[in-house]
Length: 203
Image (tube, rainbow, N blue to C red):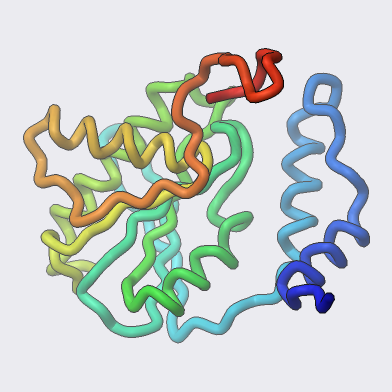
């Protein structure tokens, strides 16, 4: 049986990197450094335009990376995963390039605030909804997109923030995004029995 080329590449990356350390006993800075090293070896996908900008939100500025491969007026606001303490626009660069290449939409990857430097959950959730509101407000003049064609997407913890941002948009009376996409989302920080009958983990 032939191994899928993408799986083969991933196994090669894992083979060339040391295993992730125990997060309970390893300094967070070291874990983040190892994470950046691992993703730096992922082959880069060519995209027509990649640039960094800043969303000037109330009381803080957030770095945002914009990927544009088709000049579309549709946008994806992307919220990376990482358990609310890991991840960045750098670690999810390859994923965002892939989405821009194959979705036909501009991708806006948000470098939202992480714990423990910023209090969880308010900081990350506020960054998510405020970034959506900012993108809607500045969409036509600054980014060449339609405020009616903005999607929100995220993986793992970012999937959680995607759902939270959509709920908060409704609470604030904002237009709902055109679409929300939750990739293996982290839904609730609770323990529940699994199929073996034991408990633990996150549901």
